[in-house]
Length: 287
Image (tube, rainbow, N blue to C red; front, side, top):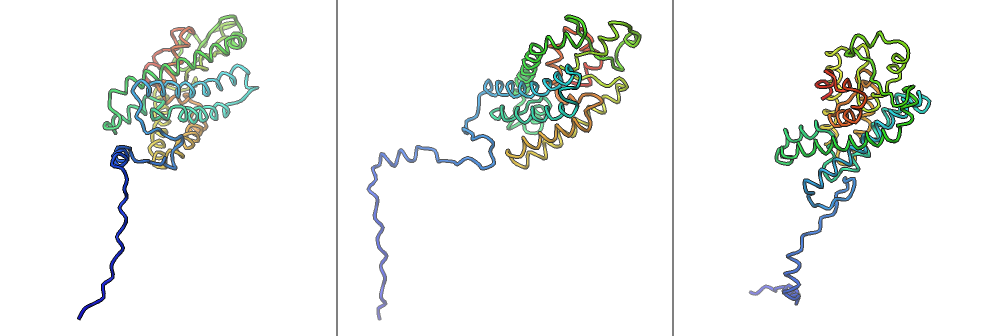
């Protein structure tokens, strides 16, 4: 007894040229960009030099917006903005700085770079730490220099004397500062060094300033670690609100530096204000 058999049609064999087949094998597969990317990536790892330039530009944008807002609010006597304007500007600065420096990973802060090298050494070797830190500091220096050049005349007017430069009175100022009278006292009350770097409120002690800066920095690092899980689309926006929130909630007492490059770079630019800009407080608490 025989059973009927069904024969399957024999598929046609493509007569493709072997040269075309070899070319197809040599071409890398097309990988569509992820829907969560901010800017389409070239999937090409940047050189260390390219990454350093990226960090420099990103940090420069960050400080231009942040310190620029401080300059406008301070020098206008509050008529062109207020404290919340400064908080919004720092948030906007971090947002645009991240978009500017996506090629390098948008660290913009030596603390972020250090943490990445510590926790992810396979992705972030320790060799990038000094390079990124230097690039970030240079970016902040360039931004502070541009702000100083732009507001040079306004600083003269606000200080009350031509080429006069003064530092705010703090808990760490010499005792003689509180006894100043006349033009010197007026200059201290109109001090503009705070445009470029942070100075604690007059009532802040050393331990209080250390705690305040530590708390703000801890909040920042915690939120960065949490927002990274949300994808590249959410991270810049999340940090925008994080920095704004820290400034609005914890910025008054010490100026919420949270960033060696953002504070130390512009502080060097303001060294013409006198050696007190790098006093004992600022040698270790901010850094």
